[in-house]
Image: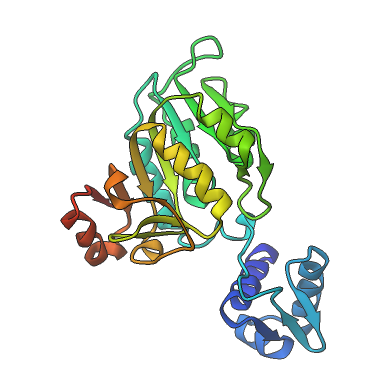
Length: 260
């Protein structure tokens, strides 16, 4: 287990338990006590946890992992979802993407499609995003035109939110929008933990001719604090086969589901 994997594991344990003890975690992860102490000290320096005598506690009950520590969760499922999503993109389209680990994979899958050829003068696809990490990663691809919103950066998701983000999105039209969500339910629709992110994501969905929700099976059948859009607004749901039973509820509501 490398350092990044240990940090991710430690933060996930804090998410679940809200408190960890050094010796118990060391035994659980199969590493030395000294290694766990160093890892916890490092994470405490980044203000991702609070050190205690003999362990650590999460900052709050609403603890959530920053994006860089969530990329390994359901990685293979997200890659399959991303490939299926990218296959929907056609040359010349204007595509919207919000922030998150799944949409980041979608952006990469679009950028690396061999048949989407273009140049800086004639880009193959225009991507509109409020996610700083996606814009940063795709800005070096000359065949992709990247348009970013303004706004205030959310430190957990790297998403830009607020009036400036809404102003830009309100002035563009999208052929297709890929929406990563914190939760999606057949009755409640798509949701986010942050009301600020939900507000901007709702406008992103509204400006799209077709809305595609991309979510791994852990998100299905769950609810979040702030609603992004009702289930009727979802044009397609792409998820993994682990959600086959729960996906049937969406099909009953008239939402096409792609299982990968």
